[in-house]
Image (cartoon, rainbow, N blue to C red; front, side, top):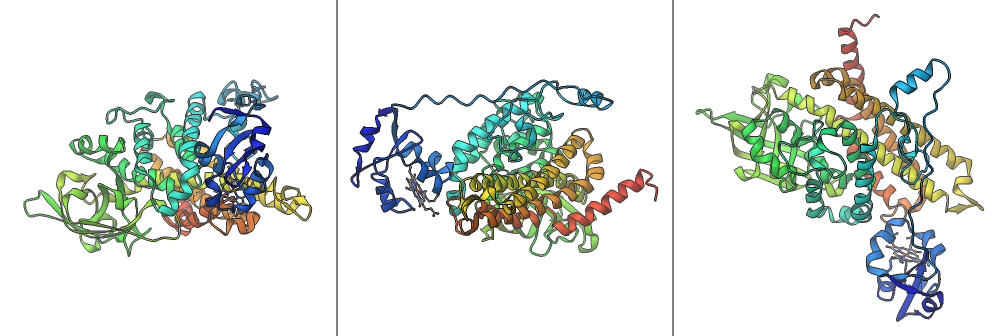
Length: 544
Ligand code: HEM
């Protein structure tokens, strides 16, 4: 790999049976690869022995090099300087603003903005990545951002397309989510050192906050695959918190360490063939045995993320009469090893690698110790969980929207139509501007909500923030749908076929509905945002 070549050396490898090319001063041996090259063999022979950087970047994005480098790179040109990472410009200290506003700024922001980070494309990352001041993020967040970005760029992003097609993410990746300590950091609470020895490299547990949690989900979502994100956090992030918050201590101690380690998997099973957002109407029943020691569970669950791979199911069941509505619902931890649990993979429009599942429970005998919360009081457990779930969905949608936007910015700087680069066409800039304004406004609302959640007791957050979070969930899914659509228009045919330069946009477009429907559909979210907020307003003495 570290071999040094002169341009003349490379030029001598210009035959079918000995074919080298140069891309960005690195030398690649394509002799055996040419037959499998999706763009064809002929096109490679035309650049054999030559610098093909320009042609390469015309047809591919940088994920391709990350994926094939280890296999195809044989060295670099002798003229190549060792690549030192570009030094970002130092950020100036905060200048106090004139007038009254100055006090506000100094009181609520850090003295200095954090160093710029990432590609520095305006709006492609949150503003604090570009050296803007923020009251929410400090050096510990910057360190975490760097840690996850490096992992996702090297080990995840280049492969998500394959995983999507295979409808599966390798087990090692999930295991790493555990050993890197990320799973333990995703429960909407303090870092649970009592249940795991795993630690996140860049942030000590005592510093962990909800903005760190936001960053884990946000940076994972840069891989541009809802299927991937749901595979690694979709079941866990909503299935585990209710158990840890409301389960019996002995059960938690027995099952949670293995889950946080990435050895066992857990999901949330609420939705049924006939009850989606209308949780109060679910019918999967749990009947207490005469000796009061077990529940016998019978019923079906549908669209359950990760179900096919799970050992544990945090399951909403009806313990009351069919008429009892939301007052007859309980939550049980059902274990696959108890028997009577069947899971079948469902074929869906999007999030292919997430393992969407149909579950059947047949006479499953569940010990009463596995009750999560109190009998017939499961509705509260479920409701408490919803805010956390919806915030996760919002973070993912906004990052996916940014990915669509970022891909468009990059592509429109290289693609030419009618004698101009796309970015030189006002109609394209208009599309980009409409994407950016929605992303930025939504993200600022998200930051403000997370700040509120961090400062409120959980029950108060459930009541006071339920409305705004529901509104922002709808805002985020509408923004995502808009950005995916506009990105697809900009990429044209490239986002209609799978893979290649428009691959991220095509995949994300397919994932849009998986965000707009579950976790509360857009319609239900918008209605709730007003109903719930008015209730809070009333309680606070709203004057009409
Ligand atoms: C390290 C060398 C190369 C590798 C690993 C590589 C790999 C690939 C892959 C995986 C694809 C499928 C689409 C995608 O995933 O982006 C592709 C498509 C393509 N490649 Fe390459 N390629 C290389 C060099 C080149 C060069 C030098 C040229 C041009 C001279 C070229 C021209 C094309 C074309 C025209 C397509 C089809 C694009 C489309 O469908 O729109 N490739 N290549």
